[in-house]
Length: 343
Ligand SMILES: Nc1ncnc2c1ncn2[C@@H]1O[C@H](COP(=O)(O)OP(=O)(O)OP(=O)(O)O)[C@@H](O)[C@H]1O
Ligand SMILES: [Mg+2]
Image (cartoon, rainbow, N blue to C red; front, side):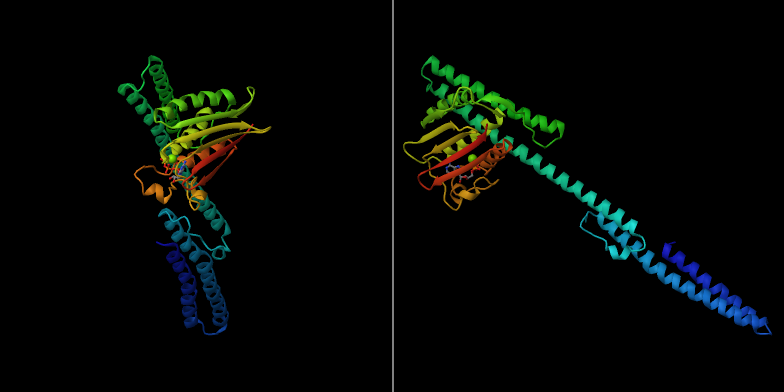
């Protein structure tokens, strides 16, 4: 039996039983005295019962019904469904406990959604960045097979670079495995104190060879003290640089392709500038190129392929290093991406 029906029956009995007794006693009472007092008593009992019933119905039963509807809604996944606090003035603890439960569930769901999104983003970023070393390895292997690596020294250089690229791939796959095993999607980098000069000299060595193979002139200009150190995650910074350089290569449309790579320092920061003389970026696209999945109309309409992820990875990595990345470009002339990293 429902609570409302049960209570209703109880109140009916409270009203009916004295009323029957009253009628019964009136039939046998000849003086009329008992009848008056008993009538008053029964009337009072009936009025109190009716008032109590109305009060319980409005203040307890209706809110309980509302609570039941809200619980059903929550069970069906509607976590936005709110109760009205006014309806629960007599039983406020129910309202507050329900709201606490609803808010907690909503927070958990939001947390789960965010961590699912981050996991998806992590996997797609790593898959994206695996393409870069793979493409380079294919280029070097083709170079060796086609005889482009004409001298034993050149062949050794190519093989060395292939070896380095497979290391890059292993690190990316390790990262993927790490996050899938620990089921943790908050990316926490291991920072180490890195000698800037040595890092860039090593980085551009491979790059030089890579760009030479595809006939792009590469100029490296460096103005860094031999004792300059910064805290960074080498692998992540390499990922960011690779993405910038691979864009410079991808969007190159000149007969005499050139990429300039400059590194310099000030008292408290180091600056990396990578510029190309490729097709450049339209003014209207420039503010959006670091947004995930953003590709200019020109990029979408060419067969170059891509998903608009590269520069969003750059931004994320640099921001995780408390740095800044900006782009300058002139359509038809070229693009410059500048990074600032604090010492
Ligand atoms: N060096 C560049 N020269 C010309 N356009 C560029 C250059 N770098 C970036 N862009 C423009 O910025 C857009 C976003 O670059 P991003 O690297 O994020 O994506 P993508 O290269 O299109 O695809 P993906 O990197 O995922 O393969 C590109 O589509 C392109 O229009
Ligand atoms: Mg790209």
